[in-house]
Image (tube, rainbow, N blue to C red; front, top):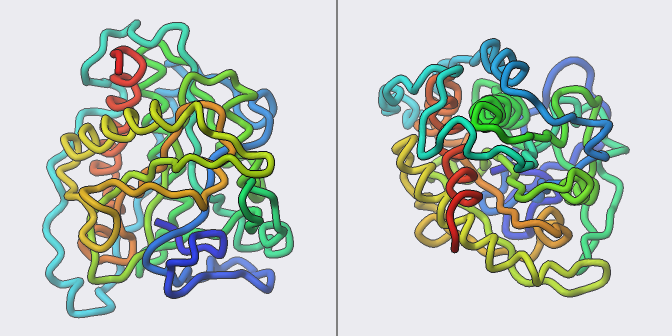
Length: 324
């Protein structure tokens, strides 16, 4: 996923922005195992309103343009396979649900990081309390070798997922929708789900692991009761959500489980503020390793991103319409 300073200490190389950069997005050198983007955000009423199917469809009809991978920076890049088959059209959601399946349900989606974080070093490096530790407010995230950033990827995929879920009747709240100059901080991201009275929350990321590793994984919350954190009530339902997400994301995208981290596509962690501080069932998904040429080629393809959104939406739908 990302390669920020607030990511877990397991990363071999962490990015910390120490100067304000001008127009260019800095290269995020990702440590290979963790990141600490977390969910939660500004009050739901101010940073993101619940969307309707119509407005959501408009957002996905004009997705963030994909930035094709630049000339490979390593010999491994030449081996990247062709993109996966085209997904269902943005405005024609499919999956295990009727059009009204999610009526009355509220879903919180958290696009990891923010495209503007790189130019707000002071703000994002500020320490915040996550219950069992203090971490940076936020990080810049990672990017592909060609400069397609994690923040761009996550915002595009969450907008696409929002459209599918809204078409099924859900009220969907985004922690940020490209409407903030930076952040929000990880503790705010966690609080956003409670502020929105959400039934479930999900944080979307792209990993920044070793270039030789590929695949996706889902991060589940470990039980944390420390300081202001007590996520005891959400651990079990979050695990059920994580299992559904692993199944549906793999089915929709064909992406394999990560071969460089986690175990069978699942990782349980206690160092992420978005999970420690959440009061509703919540998981993170690392949709692929953006430092790997094969994964990067998929993730820069808008058709594959639609498949990713479909898998996410189907998992959330299954979680809210079936019993554990």
